[in-house]
Length: 359
Image: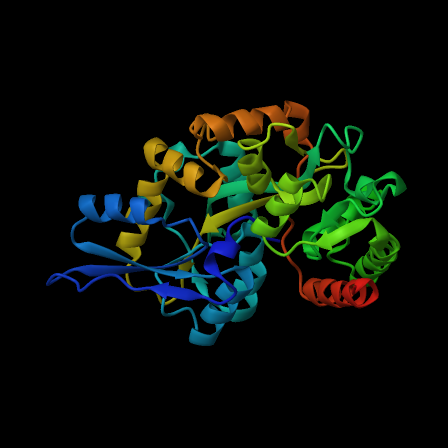
């Protein structure tokens, strides 16, 4: 369902290879998202652990699974898929290995985030992931031009004809379903029901096409439309909205009335990784409060440590607290574990919408 920073990674995976290693040095090979292993964080880690060099490959959920499936879980030492993509992929392809929680500073994590990820990634009593960063998708609104826009399908209100935007991706499908009173996650185990829901969503979004100024593809596209006033509202990653808020405080993130769609990216060990100790050191390093703050500044996402919002830079913390009430956070629709067949239905649904809305 992502999201905020894959645009930094381009459309294909990019390997960033570290410099020549000193004798006896170990390489930690990360498979992760753009911004999750910034030069600043890598430099600080390598300074503290001079016997470890970090090598980064940027990817997304689908590519992570494909790469690990192709190699049987080799080639990387630490991966960062969405927590809801781990269980089914491992059961089908055997690409991960259990974590040793005794080697992780688990007391640093927000207990709600930690327990959600552990419960969703446990197989036969073994834990396969812990959380790292979280965020949501919802609505971005210029409150001076669309003050009454509160939910996903308000983007289709005729009064905003030609002045809204959206991204044709699974987030708008799921969000629209919730706004229509459906529970798409509850239907994951019933593909016939899920197909029925997606067909209704497709009909609604096709009927909405005249409202859409343009379908955005990346955060830069969306930012340009919102800051120029070409669009008065759009679905969005919260991190993109928070960045724009720093430039124009009239443009705010609105958690939809029917619920923002939440995601959590995790840490998981590929089955044939060869640097487990280095991977555990990296997990413990980047969940330190001071490093979590650097992560928040770079990504705009909130770290899953205790008080994660409070360690964000001041401008992003202001934007988050301006957007979310406690009730909004309680209403987040956290991603459900992906079941076989779900993504096929979504892909065909998106292709139908794209064909019907091509301009």
